[in-house]
Image (cartoon, rainbow over all chains, first blue to last red):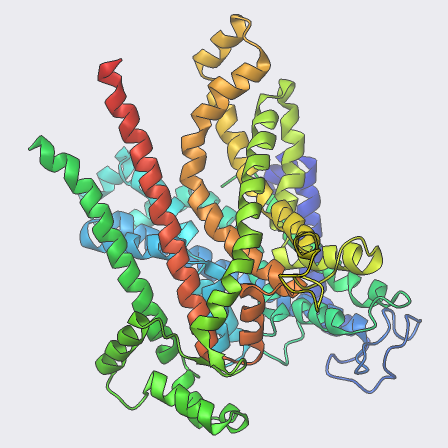
Length: 270
Length: 331
């Protein structure tokens, strides 16, 4: 634990700021149900009220409390990002390990698919699957995971091929030759890259999820920030008065804060 | 023996890309049939009630869900050969016709976008890399932050700010309604509508190439020929032109194929926000109306585009390195 603090202390100031912001996002996501003034499904309020002490960010045209929707969005977006980021970074690493360890036909086949996936526009394929599949959050996450592991795989494979050549691994291989032992020996070597990729893939997941939601794809009941942004932008009178200030700007800032902190946290690492 | 070595890589590449093409076609055939909630179950589902029966018949004839899998594939290939991509529910028109109609707008937006953003990005990246005392690194953070912003959000922000609030640019569409190609101010009108989406696209594409050329420049800068050129008193402009840019180009070209593919994805989202009548707007309509044939057509076209771009860039890179290699003995 003290190790971790020492590492954080060595980070440049802007990265420490990013960590702080991300910790705040996580805290809000965890605490959201306790802090939310109203339920996200509750649309019994008068519609389109400007911000007041009762409704901190006013209400939308259906009578949802926007502040509650925003807090609720933290849960969806942060957890979607964490799950999708974890799964795609791990899937990419695992496939890269299999590819580097087995070599031969398995490596060739995996590499073929990876090159193919690199050529097709990722987001359009994800969109396609998310549209065809049953609209729920699980399918959205799966679609993101299955088509975003490729870049992790490519870089990890090169790195692991390097690692497999070093003396320590060759020694283990000559002793036992067990794939699990090699994986254990390499675990500490690839952990730093894996964690950078984890952050990067979280960033990607937020971008993808928001884009999908903006296009109206995904769980219609899950009020993510992308949906909130779409609802605001579809609202015809957004630019009369200052409605956009409390309707459009808060979810926009929330998304931007998250993606920018994630990207800057791993800048220069991968 | 030597001859075989010279021919086989080219042949192998062609075979490889041929296999990629087949794989893409197969994926675009199989995906809609394999995903749960696919068009086959759609035929019996709730959506089908809202679709006129004539369209539904076209749909059935195109997908032929009752035939065995292999025969469906043969039918799909045969239709592809006739450039028949099915019949759009929403537009009540053949998908291929819609896509080819939209393609010119997408190209009008994405090609200049790609050219401008690549040129600008290389210029920025090289300047950053050559700046004294590593001052260029300060630009790195804003670039990374810009790169992290989803393209559609950037487009939405620009539309709000410059289209609706400040009214500097037309906020949507590709030309003023009512103006046709024969009207006098047509070209100017199209240009005016193009400007804001183009600027957004360029801003969203610049960071990744700029960061790449910054990193390459840092590497080249350490080479002895660059330091030596400086000792010789060669002007900074010449060093940049002759010694740096020429040496980082192959590396950038290698990454540019990815960039080109990303640029089209980016332009789709920019189009969707600005209701620009290209593929992006088609995609938006297709997703919001669950227009499966149209979606499948767009998927196929954009994937084929990706494979073609990769093939073109790879062949450019190959000939580039090969001519260099051949020139050496003559010099």
